Length: 318
Image (cartoon, rainbow, N blue to C red; front, side, top):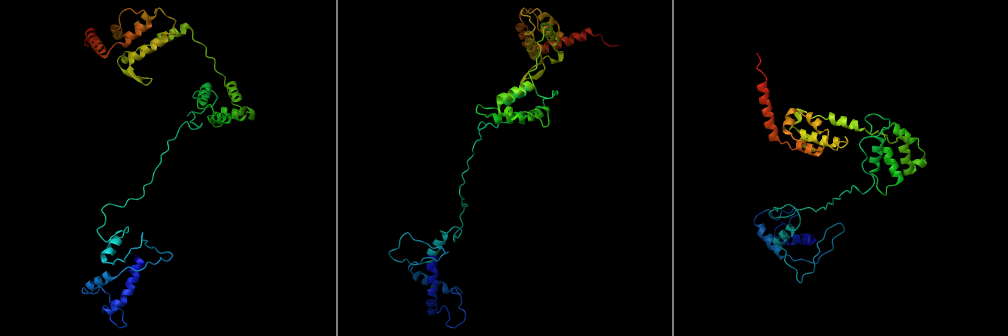
């Protein structure tokens, strides 16, 4: 359509000369829009133009292809040109659009990472030295932590690599590993046996009954811990409840099923707690439950009474 308009305007120049829009001399022709009188004549002329046969665009040019040839050539008007330009993106002759042009929508796919997709899971944060230093891990614990990262399908090479990657650089454990032969490193059963031979499980002698009873007697309840909130193994509880839990655990190893030591442990409590925990207890559980059952209100009243008694019994200073 653009090509057609150009050819029609070129051919219309001669007609405009005949209609005296341009002078007949050889000077440059004035613009047909140089005066207001020429506008009606130009509009009249453009309305008389008709569409001619369409020419194929030359290579590198854009052409407009109609869906079908019209039965008759329509007249070309200024309104047609305005409508044509309005349909071209960014070339509207009318009021600009109020809504911005939307760009292409880019689909984004987020793939969740499966932490169990392979064997390469995170190793323990602490390195193993193997020289018996105080801050070092227990050898058996390091071996168990490493094996817990394995999967059923993990290869022996993978297991060996994971074990060695946890050794501290230039440590006794790393030097030991570098001294192993290829056959031992390539077979996990042999490598595990070699590790346990190098760092055998330590033999810890069992405590005697008297030693367990001594630990039970040494566990004392402090007065300042009564009713105080403490944090034990991720749980908030009062200090006397935490003490009762420790006493119950220690009593299990003291070989005292009859509770003969309960009276002795009760006598070791602060006086204010003994006032709140009274009676006879046949089992350690009964005694510990009584200690844990002391509530805040009872503690507040008992402590206040004890303070008044202390003030009465203490003579004023001279």
